[in-house]
Length: 307
View 1 (cartoon, rainbow, N blue to C red):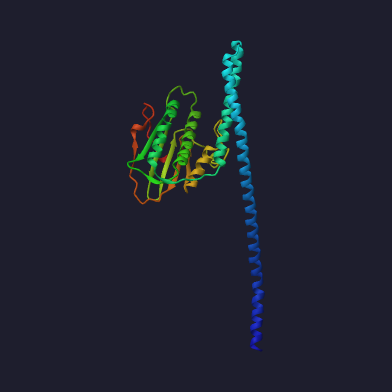
View 2 (cartoon, rainbow, N blue to C red):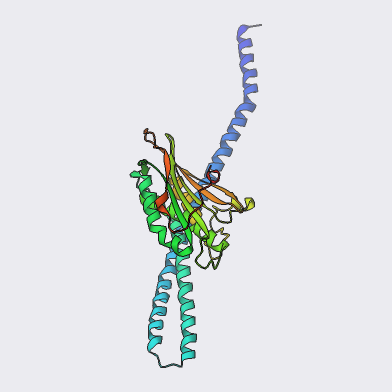
């Protein structure tokens, strides 16, 4: 047989064998293209919905401020009105209730706009120890009022990394507020006694820095742990469910992660992990005994809660 015919026959057989493979690859490419187009349309739709809901929230917030202002003016005018004491008291209770609801709705809208808005980081070299220490100073009065002992555990020296100070403070403060509310709800009407401890710990190594926010509250049931970072999921009365979601979002924008370790009856520990770019070895941590917020002798922190 002519060698040329053998060559042509081999090419024909090869082409016939490759046809199913080429067809499969084309189908896969077409499927991936459809998925990409579908994903792009979905993302565009979500962006439109985000913009629309943000605008709607602003439209609600503006008249809400007007309602709150008029309620305040009515309350001031009520003091000068010629009314019987029982009638004045009844109207004042209604105005106070209206003012409280306006403030509650304003808080919900503020949290929503904060969560739905775009997070723009302005990272600068900052000392994490100083930041958390400032937050502890700021939050001491709230702990004193609630009967909560606030303790800090810091390394001997600074722990520097590139972060957005304002946003990170917001994330840590959200975790502190969440811990405080959990302890208060677990021990209502404490009558001035110490109801728990809030421990702030900063530590780090060559790879990352960590901020621990530990409480001795009721803890979180395992079945609820998987949902606590979802928006509008709250297990506290009056909670919006956006505090933890916003905190996690801020941490993730810093290329970090927010972990939680909790055991019912023993409390919870939220840990912010932030990557480090510095090569300096952090100093060994030590407790700061002079940072207690009440005169009571606090129990030592349970290291197992934060590991």
